[in-house]
Length: 150
Image (cartoon, rainbow, N blue to C red; front, side, top):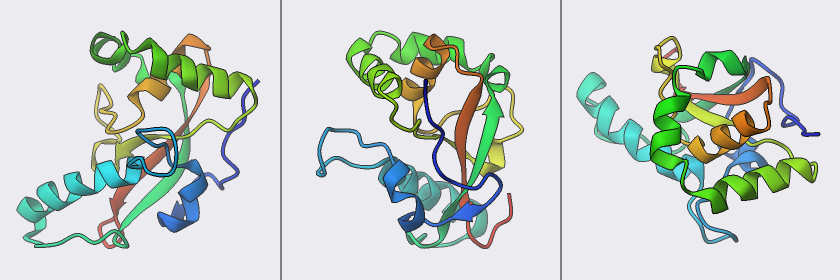
């Protein structure tokens, strides 16, 4: 029914290496990617934590993991409340998955991977589509700074 990305679980990747699996906010090549949207979070939050003035795009890496859907059970009610009425985006993800396209990962900041509920930084509509299709294996990117272990 759906494909997982052709990535190695547990491996850390750069943005360029995972480019085919980056969701876009708008259709076409002009829309911002998930990576574009998560980068400012690192610039803001890591400045306060590590006194770093600039976090460049090459410093943020993603560890690819596959999580069981149950890890998102506590997160889903809030995501449904906030994003659940955007049927067009959720249905577009569902259609793509049912057509055999790979499931793009949801994004979690690595520091918060053990949080309960798990905060999803990007991919909320995707996660809702995954839940509606009752997918048990959810692709995840744990994003972190390259020199700061998760």
